[in-house]
Amino acid sequence: MSDSFQKQLIAAIPSSWNHNASALLGVPSTLSLLAAKEVSGDGMSGALAVAMTWSAAFAVPIISGATGVLICLFKSEECEEIDRLVKQPTDGLLRPGGRSLINSVLQGAATVLNATAPAPISFGNVDYIDLTIDETRLGSIVGNSAHIGTFSLTVGTDIMSQALLLYAPEGSLETAPKQTATRNTQAEAPAQKEQTPQSQPQPQTTRRNGTQRRVEAAPRNIERLLDVELDVIVRFGITNVPLRDVVRMGVGTMVELNRAVDEPVELLVNGRPLARGEVVVVDGYYGVRITEIGPSSDRAAAIL
Image (cartoon, rainbow, N blue to C red; front, side, top):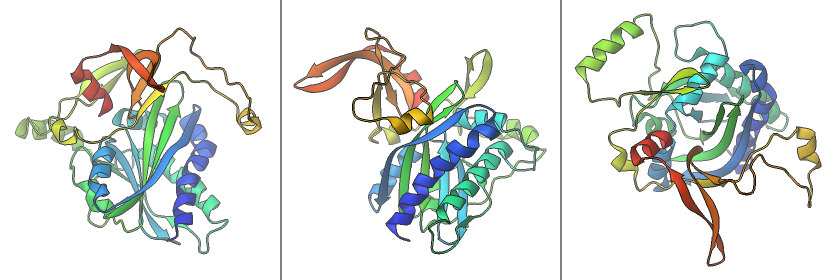
């Protein structure tokens, strides 16, 4: 498959998300491309290690017009919120709301792609995969190469995070058995926990706007990921701008942010706020002197 298709595919997903997601979620939501790259060979191990920090995956085979698998990855907390907002009846499988949203987004993306594709593009069924269960699952699906898109994700006013998109032209779901939820899942979970008390990190809880949510604790084998490079973003502020104003932007346009000049800037790692600090200049380069940061254990839990 040509590079143009891969670029068009990664570009079509946020376009369809921004057109369809808000109606299903019931709150405004945007997905914006931050970076895209192709990874293969020796670079795959590092890329997969980073991708594993997104623990919730929706995998979809491309069944016509192209080959491979498309994988949309979210953080567990964001995935739970999406599934809660997209109210769907239980169908015996995990994350019905999230799967419904991804299916709608892909249908819209297929419409965009088919306007120029030499053969009609269509996607198969959406499978939810909990990557915390087996660290090898993602690698077995993706194979030896992937095109990766990193996106900023907003859902309502509570979620400002990042999502990841992997397109694996040679990927396959045949080696990754589906995960299903049955009525016995809740009853089986405690027994499973007693048999392997150290197999999974204990979840923590946090509150946002008075709502209690589960946040997975940092994994015990974090040492395996310490050499993985992560994107660090300095955020001066954010604002909401209508699409009409974005289209009209040009050289000299002023964009007002929600942060005063004397307020500290935010340091984001993997899309999560990690610290705050003040902007400095070092040898002609901008830098940030950290003034506020939490304990290392809290930082690891926040990033992963």
